[in-house]
Every structure is written in C-alpha cells, then in structure tokens.
Image 1 (cartoon, rainbow over the protein chains, first blue to last red):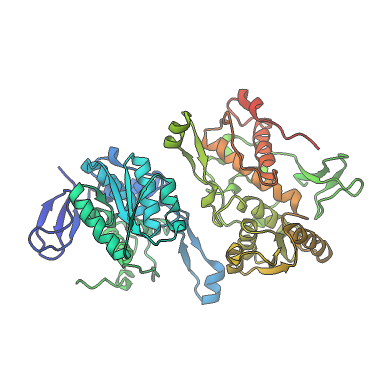
Image 2 (spheres, rainbow over the protein chains, first blue to last red):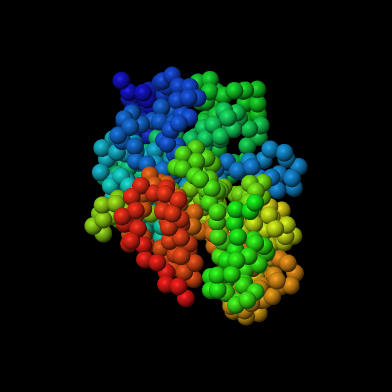
Length: 268
Length: 268
C-alpha cells in the first residue's frame, strides 16, 4: 500500500498519489499526506551523508527510484566571530552553498526528479533563472532524463551555464520569468513533462523540509530557538517549518518547549 | 621531541622546525621531514570529516594549534555519464569546489595558518589573485589573526570580495601578481607576518597532499591507475604525488602495483 496520498489544501479532497498538482474540484494546490512508518533517531544515525537518509519521511515509495547526487547533510557551522559581534552565544549557519550544484535547490529538485522516475515520466524540466536550473539539470543527467529549462531569453548566460554543462535544453522565452513559468506549465501539462516547480510541485516542495531535519539532527535532535531563513517565494520557509513540525509529530525531538517560537505561515 | 624537521631540497642541510623557508647556506627551499608515528587504516576511519583526520601525517606538533574550518573530505563522485562518453568504467571526480571557501586552497592555507599559530606569529597573509585570498582570510578569521592580502591594484573586486567579507586587509600593489608576491615576501620577512604561500611555504604545501590521502581512503585505500590534476604552479601536482608516496611508505595502501604509473616530478 502506498505511504502517501494527495490532499487539496483548500477543500481537503483526497486523491491517490498521481502526476497531478491541482484539485479537480476547486483548483486548490495538492499537498502530500503521509502515513509515516515508525522511526527512531537510530533509524537515521548511520546512514548515507545525504538528505536521502530521511527516506521514510519523503514521498518516494520505492528506494530504487531515488535519483541522488549526494546533496544535503551540509555543514551546520557555529559562527563564533559573527555571534560575538551580534551578542549571540549559539549562532549557527547552515551552509547549503556546498551542495553539489551550490544551492539548497538540490533538495526539492532531487525529490521531484525521483518522483518523476517513480511516475515513469520521460522528460523533466523547470522554469528558473538560475539555481533551480542547475539543480534540475544535474539530477536529470544523473537520472537519464532529457531536461528542458524555461527561462527568459534575455537572461545572462552565466546563470544557466551550469545547467547547460549538464546537457539541459534551454528554452528561451521572449518575456519575463512569469511568462517562462506559464509556458513551462502549458508545455509540461500537454506533453507530460515533469516540470519540477510546477506540475511536480506537490512533491518538489517536500525536498526542502530536509534542511530542517538535518539542523535538528545536527543539534542532537533539538530545535533552534530562532531561525533566520531567506524568503524568496516563501516556499522554503514554509517547508522548513513543516519539517520541524513533522519531527515533533513523530516524537523525534528532545524538547519541544521552543516550538511555539516557530511562527506558522498563515493559511491563505 | 618534535615530529618534524626542515631539510634543504638542494644541499640537504637539516634544521629544527622554525619560521624559515630558505636554506642559510645555499638559498634552496626547505621541505618538511617527518618522523611518522605508527598509524593504521583504523587510526583514521572514525575521525572528523575534514582533512585534519590525518593529523599524524601533517606538520603540526600540538592538536591545540589546529585552526580548522572543516575543510576537506570532499566527495569523490563516480562520473557515470562522463565516463561512458569517454569509454572509462571507473572515472571519479574529486569535488574540492565544495570546500568551505570553494577551492582546494583551504587545504594548504589551513595547515599554514595552524603552523603560524604554533610559531606564535601575530599576523598572516598571502599573495593571491583569488582563491588563496579567500582560504587564507577564512582561516585567519577563525584563528583570530589579522590577515593581509597582497594583490594587484587592478584586480576585479569580485575576486577578493570573499576575503574582504572575512575581514582581510587588501594591500593593493601597483603592479603584477609577481610584484605582489615580491612585496608580500619583503613585508612578511621584515614584519614577521606569516605569508602562507611564501615564508610559510614549507608547511603550506603539506596541506595539499591531504587530497591524495582522501582519494586513497575513499577508494578503500587503493590508488587510481591514472590521475588528472590541474596544473597551475605545479605545487598541487607535486603534493598529490607526495601524498600517495607517503601512504605507500607507511604501508597504508592495499596494492601498490600501479604506483609506477605516478610520474614523479623531475628534481630541479
């Protein structure tokens, strides 16, 4: 039996997991719902040094579908000097810049492309102006997928050079990043291409929460009192919050008294 | 008793380890000579995930002098796709771009600055046009040293922005990289500043050999048949060769039949 299902964030309608991301009834976004197996801290302690050590908490049914470039388990570095300057005794920096393609995007892209393999899709892609293109192209190359990167035609080539080096196809869109997203969505849906940040989004966003899992494990299963998270679309912030909440829900955290400090993202 | 001494590469004169890098008699460069303690594969297997796991093979006498930013133990990634294209079944890439300051220079800079601490120096620096400046500045910040980066005055600021972010002092030299080296050497020697790639060079070059140690350990203590190494000054190539030869000399390698393939650098 499948470990995951999909549920509409708006009307709560449930679906079996499938290559879909929008509710048939109300057009709300679909979220992954889990039936987590029993895990303990020991489940993870001696595993591979990548975010796939948390396999049981990720939306892939079969380990053979994992497409991994060994991303994650990046250093959590105590910033002594900066901490002193700021008057903070326990300041840590999670250094996701040393992921294989140099950004946290290796987390969501890897989960999305593994799921694309599980769905049996024949091609993948993304709309991106940089980091996501690199992460998607690297995982696509590893998984043997053709990869289509949709980006504005006036983008600096330096921003997609890394993706091109992994063999991605650059689809130059005569318009803005929003236009590139729109065209990627249309082509993805009509051709059955897994666009990681659009029609694979329900699974894609699940990858980012592994950053929270790692921080907790690296702090010996404790949660920081305060978190500072860069906010682009807000997706990573939401995912990190979800990660800590999930660890709390399956009783992996030592002390949850500071969980109240994690400000929840208001529901739409 | 000290584990290391210095020896002139030319006339072979020996010296106790000290803050010096040139032979008093013949002006030849000084190399570190070791009295390696007995080590086995098990000595290293459960240690920290940085190149300091090889402490016994590095020229620092006292562990308390280590200035570490957790560099090294970078991934050795099997390049399946590239290997297929090139007709190679066992092609691996050692990814030193995911070191803390993004290059292999964290290896020599870290050893040099640890040795500067052991020598009791009060400041450090380097002549550099980029990567070494970042690595030196990061280790200097960690060790609490003032850091002086000597570079041509017409350098693109992007190349030293990272060093500046670690608090380094940029000494803009009106001339070439060679001129910057010359001025750094003069100021370093007259002011007692440890210039990592000049007057600390005997110890500095020892850091780079850890790349070879890691490759051997990651291949379960085997040596690759062929190595492709980028050659700038040739220092890294030499150091990597030295690393494998040292592992052979202390009997840590499983099979040394392919060591003959390692082409030795001709002596000057």
